Length: 76
Image (cartoon, rainbow, N blue to C red; front, side, top):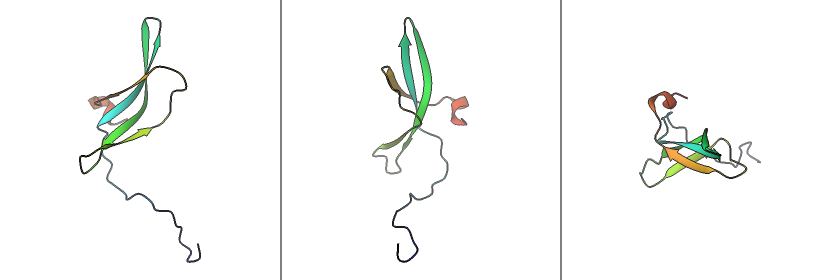
């Protein structure tokens, strides 16, 4: 860092856009399912993929499901 600048590159700033999908962890306990929101996914600008951001990763079992957000979830 001889020039006083960091060598790490930062991602370009983009406008806040609502996620295309919400990531949910589904824990099955007996006959009940418990849904916990664990992250979200955004479409890439070129339409060739998605970025998935997980706020937590389930430690044991269950499933992760990606669903389109409901209107009340988009602001969350």
